[in-house]
Image (tube, rainbow, N blue to C red; front, side, top):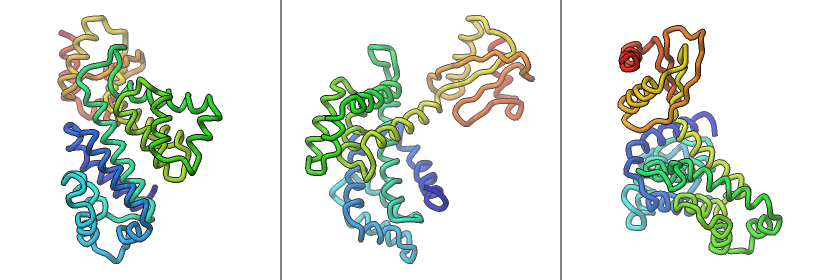
Length: 275
C-alpha cells in the first residue's frame, strides 16, 4: 500500500489509537465481519473507493449497510475509512484488516498481568502466532487441509485451534481470521503479517538506553522508575554501554529519541540517576 492509500491508513490508525485502551475482541470481530462483507462484493468496494463520490456519501453507505448489525463504534470506524481516499478497491479491505488486527493486538497489550510463564500479553500473542506457523510448516497434511477450497471456514478454524490448544483468545481470533479469510494469500503468511504488527506495537514500549558506562543496580532502578513515570506505563529497558556517547545518556522508545533536543526531559532522568 502506497501513496494516498498509505496516508489514509496512517490517518485511520492515528484516529484508532484513542480507542485502543478500551478495545475489545468483539470490536475486532465486528471489523473483520465488515471486511468479509466488503470482500464479498466487488460493487461495494468500487462504490467505497469511487473518487467521484464524496466522503460523506461513502460514509453514509457504510452506516446504512451496517446500522443495527454491528456496534456504533465499529460502524463509525468503517465509515471513517470509507470517507478517505484509496488508490485501489483492495486497499480499503487491507486497511480494515489492519485496523481489526490492531484492535486484537491492543487487547493483548492491555492485559494488566503477565502470564504464568512471566511474559506479557503481547509476547504471548507473538509466541502463539509463531507456534501456529511452525505447526503448519511441519505438516504437509495440515497445509493441504488449510488450503482446501471445499473445506468450510469453521472446519479450518477448528483444525487451527487444535494445532495451538493453549493459545490466547487474541491469538485464536487472528489465527481464525487468517485460516478462514486469507484473502488470496497463504494463511501462514497472513499470520506472519499479524505477528509483525504485534512486534511493531511491542517495540513502542521497549526503551533502548545508551550510557557512557555501566550503571549500578540503584541507577538502573531509578532509570526504570523515571522512564515508567515519563511514559505512564511499565517499559522494558535494554541498556547499552557506549563510551563515545556525548551527553551521558540517550534513550529511544519506539520512534522517539530523547537526546540533546529534549534536554529538559533527559536532565530530569539524569538527576534521578545521580540521586
